Image 1 (spheres, rainbow, N blue to C red):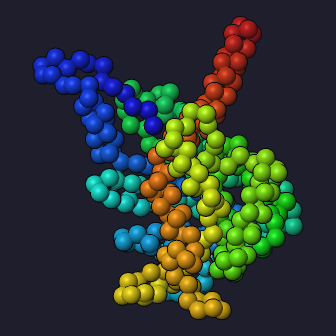
Image 2 (cartoon, protein in one colour; image 1 turned 120 degrees about the vertical axis):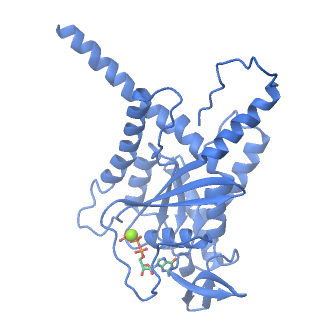
Image 3 (cartoon, rainbow, N blue to C red; image 1 turned 180 degrees about the vertical axis):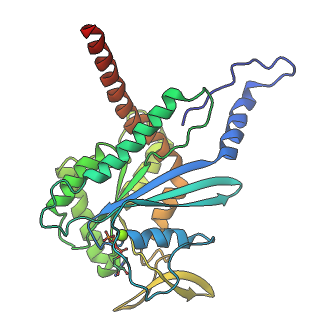
Length: 315
Ligand SMILES: Nc1nc2c(ncn2[C@@H]2O[C@H](COP(=O)(O)OP(=O)(O)OP(=O)(O)O)[C@@H](O)[C@H]2O)c(=O)[nH]1
Ligand SMILES: [Mg+2]
């Protein structure tokens, strides 16, 4: 997020530099945050259900299904859901982009292409607005700040197709893996699977968010460490409401009983939600801008320049 200090000196009255940061802060907080998340993964892993669960878990209107027996429809195209959340006077516009699952075609080659194209299109449209926008005008941000990658709860290993898609995604977006439908694994199986996935990701040299940096201060470093232990988040999604201690929450009936998705002993849904909407929100936005968007922009501008000089050459 870029912040511009007013060029005009304050002549009329003394305003200390010490107050500038709080002025900027106020301005930013008033404007609020636009935060765009995308869900990607094999078909039927509960991507649409988790989006619904995230929105329902906030104490605001959900546009999700109300009838539990209504069949889940397969997602056939990319579309997004937006909701504005206000917490302690800070406005957050949370936008979640749902994508069709892949993996059930005979030929899964290039199944990731529409997803990568969508991400790049958002960068491209932001760049266009940036190049034409009047200075200081607010640009609507549709760039994907975080991509949740759904891993099938096999308990064994990642699928070859996952490795391919992960490689493509990590080149253009912050990727955070989650273990889908983790109610099908016991706590022990889950832990073993997590470690197995981490090994595999390391082996294939897949660069996930948060990235290591030399510039990290102690605060960043400890923030990242605490989150690295949790990734991939083992999540459970549900479209059914259950009542626990008089409070309506999302839950699932399974062979051991009822799982409350908001119970931290059952699943890491709450950790994921806090990670997205509280602890790492600002950093995910900044990293998108500083790393992924910058690299896209540099390539585009270079191509433009080269195109331009080639044209001049012809004349
Ligand atoms: N056991 C279990 N079932 C789940 C969970 N989340 C979703 N399901 C079920 O899995 C099925 C598929 O869920 P969807 O949310 O449609 O999956 P999707 O990933 O969006 O599927 P596509 O749109 O085809 O890619 C539904 O019957 C859900 O009820 C979960 O956490 N645990
Ligand atoms: Mg879906």
